[in-house]
Image: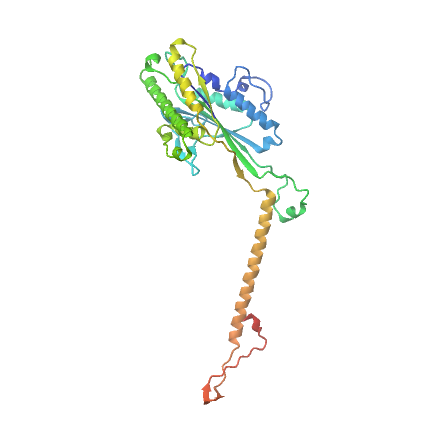
Length: 379
């Protein structure tokens, strides 16, 4: 994750870049990947490196899938900037997944195939983002913007689908192709925070003042989360788990929960103003960044083991063999039951006979079994 922080008018939006330069260039192929211009920001440079890496990978265009989502937090309301039915009153809900991560319900995620396509999407999203003029900035961002690039690297698939058992047997052990059995997923979160501002300096009134209050509220809670995470990193393992992290006090911190204290590596860009009148705000920004620097996260790869086609075919074959064995066992039990019925129907009871014993003559029911043609072992 890359987060740009600073006071209003310090150049955060310019540093991050709201669109890729490819969308402003004429000519050339849409799928062509060209280096960004020197004046472009973090987002177009990141997009270029991402697609360049995919292009250099063997089979990268087929195995690597890239999706983009873009939202803003305006007055503590989440808005989808890429939605085809964009309305300023449409608020997105934030929910927790079963694995503890955070999801935005209904957020649009669009697959992209080139930097130009990303640039066009972000250009249209930038026009929807809430901006206004204040005494300190003619085009001041009135919302926090979060751009997420989701990357999924799927395992390599054999060209011929191995759907039958013969296909498995036809592949010799030494000639079996190497198959990647892991699916790797990651996301690049690019955050352009709205600038902290003071009402006296911006001269905000009415709606602008309400926007500034909500902006400062989100940044204040973000500072509390950073301070708590910084303290927990300096504590022992047992004591750090008992420390409360106020992620839920703001939608901004809740959405950045994975970036701040989760499985991620985060970079904070501190944007400061060169004006003497903003020295105090510049010092606060540097202190803010210093606390964020002391946060320690241990990022690990998000790997999901995926079954290869060869393994799937082998399991299908084993499943069929087990089904066949089960059917044979059921048929054998059925035959035994039928033989028992036939045997019971061929048994007759004889007349009482005299059986001599040492105590004298007793009347006993002597039963004679006619077992001719009956397999006694099956009874």
